[in-house]
Amino acid sequence: MERRSPGVQVNQTIIEEAIDQVLAGNREAYRTIIKAYERKIYTYCYYILRSHEEAEDAVQDIFVKVYQELRRYEKRVSFNSWLYKVAYHHCLDQVRKRKRRNRLLSLYKEQQPKAYYNPNDEEPLQKLFMDDLTAEESNLLILKVVEQYSFEEMGQIMDCNSATLRKKFERLRKKLVRQRINEGGSPHGEMARSN
Amino acid sequence: MEKWQDPTESQKMEHIRQTFQNHEMPVDSFSDSIMKRIGDEGMEKRASRKSGNKFLKKSLVAAAAAAVLGAGIIGSGFISPVMAETLKQIPVVGSIFKGIDDKGLNAAKEKGLSTAPNQSVTHDGVTLKVTDAYYYGSRLAFAIEREGIDKDKMMAEMIIEPIEFDPAVKEQQYAKVTMNQSEKGLLGSAEVKLPNGKNLESQMSSFGDVEGKKNAILYDYRNLNNVEALGNEFELSITVPVTQIAEPFEIKVPVKKVMEGIIKLDLNQTKEAEEFSYTITKLELTPATSRLQLSEEGKAPTVKEKDGYTTSEMFYEIVDELGNAFSSSGSFNLPAIVYPMVDKDFSPFPQTPKTIIVKPFTYSIDESHKALRDKEGKQVKHYYPELEQTIQVEQE
Image (tube, rainbow over all chains, first blue to last red; front, side):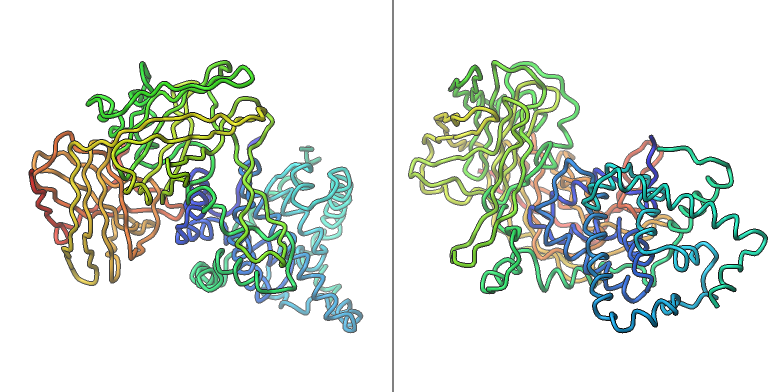
């Protein structure tokens, strides 16, 4: 199966070479890696964390972490999925921390699902990510639909069972189909409901 | 992957992809702030700072894997960019050095400067033989051939294991490097011991399969540190681990220093134009390699060749009075960055030159660091005549 890669087309040879250079002590070579992947990782974080500010912090934290752990990267897996693995677990941590922080506010937050953004700024599909999907569902959708990973690869990224992921994704797919029907002729139906 | 059930659904998925792919970042790049943080925290620093801390995460990745390997390039494939670049072309007969199109090693072989120790060791049906060795004081290279197992691949996959950090241990801890043992007969990183019992120290070491040549591997050590005192002839003890064979292969290899045709110049000549300047500090010419050391200062020049392209870091070409020209190695194009220390390897000149002109140049690179190419597919170089310098090479 042909795999699409979002954002900048990443030349794997250059990336592998950059990794070798960083490991050999040329820190500046890491810039190449950042530039090749930052946009997709930023976007990923944004759709999971649903906040520009948090995504900005997260993308920087993730690249610092990846640099510090670069010696653990094994070339048997693609760098792309390794990066996603670090990003996934980082975002998960952030979501957990946020939950702890906001435990008392959770009720309030449930009633204010759009606390992090202004719906008028976003196009309908971004709204889908923001309003209608949980962070976990956004994650599934990005890895499966955008990155076109297999469930096995997703299982490796998320450290979980691929069969479970398959089931979860199937449910998500049905939800998206239903959602399309609900949308009907009114693309703003969802927004009207939540406002 | 399952099929989407109706076209509208697949359209929707496509739309999701595009939404994701078209998502803009609030800034052009986070690379400056990330690089700054890395500079502050660093791999190494982080490890040592952590060592004073009692509340530590386990499985800290060691900073010093590179030190274990002699600050080498770890990983698959070849080796120095000079070799990598030239390697592809050659079908091979005879000795491995002849096979590799490392012009330097070839020249050494042709001039009879490399030795053919032909020392071999056999364990468990696998024989390793050192077929060529080359040593000139600052570079050591040797080639090993394998018998008993016949396959293209010779180099084992190296796995760097994270360290289980133990705060009770005061000494610096190194990451353990192991080989992937799933296939028999693959070679790992060699341990090279000098007659005084110490390990060979080099700033750059690498090893890798020889493309186009089965059952052959080359080990290459450059910018050696601790061999000066050993004289011109001595015996190395090389220990090579081999996958699925418990006993290491220990091979004694006599080496003889090449004395002919080696020129070393300590220099201090600077050229400046606009905001950029560079100072040449060292030139070394040997039959196996030319090496240029310099330092850059100021702001790297940029030039606009085409929309969507920016200027790469500075590269250097060296040209002798006969017009033999060699570019500094590497296809690895970084954006215009100034390096306080540049140490470049070149293919050797066929004869010792009288003068060498150093010509700085840049490539034009796109977002993914691919260089702009002309109609013939050659990378477009932009030269800076105002920055050229001539080095007088004294003839003995």
